[in-house]
Length: 101
Image 1 (tube, helix red, strand yellow):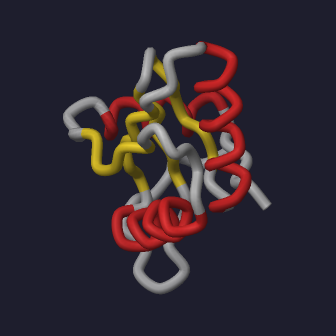
Image 2 (tube, helix red, strand yellow):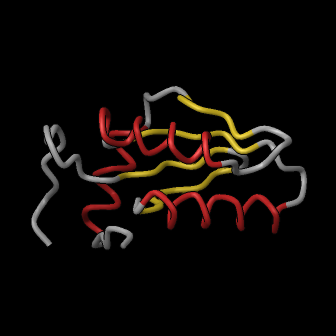
């Protein structure tokens, strides 16, 4: 189940993600199971990541980002162009403390 974020939490996470570099890139083969597994692993370690999606069509890109977020249980914090920011709280080691709801 994707994480639900308030407006204040989304603003906070956008600020935290500003200086991050894109960690993973979804290529021409689209969303394969290994790509989803790698994103889930990166979310577990970092909680907040940037992912680049290399689809040329805007609707296709939006669909891939939405599917990636739902398959990993992450919240879509922001999407600008080809880059999406995803957040999911770590189950083992929580690093980011969100503002209250």
